[in-house]
Structures are given as structure tokens and as C-alpha cells.
Image (tube, rainbow, N blue to C red):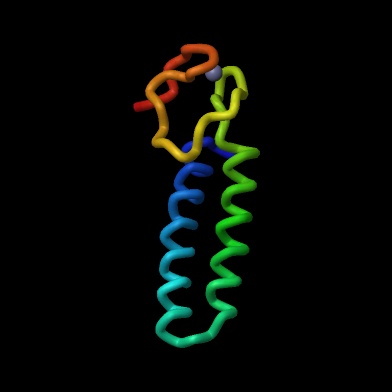
Length: 79
Ligand SMILES: [Zn+2]
């Protein structure tokens, strides 16, 4: 998988998790927040696997936005 796509999925899962938390607060159905937790954990695992430098395969920090240059090999990976 493309590292950009992986990053977008991770970001999307954060919003999905927050939305499902909100839904739980409104409906009192705990299954929503559990589902959100599962989605978030799955997204974190895929980010750990796929969010890597396309040149040297070094792990990138998915808590930050996509850097312009790889912190490991220095190759350009941003826009
Ligand atoms: Zn690299």
C-alpha cells in the first residue's frame, strides 16, 4: 500500500473514532465506541506496517504530517 494512502486511512480513523464516541454519548449504545476502538487499533497497525519511506522502508512518524524529506535516508518524499 502507498504510504500516503496509509496515512489518510489513519487520519480518517481518528475522526471516525471521535464520531463513534459522540454517537455513544448520544445513544448510550456502547457498541459504537468499541467499534471505533477496533477501527482505530486496526488503522494504527496498518500505519505501523505501511507508513514507511518509499526509498529505504524506514518507519515514518504517523503522529505527525508527511515530512518533505525522509528523516532516515534524506530522500524527498513530500509534495
Ligand atoms: Zn528513507
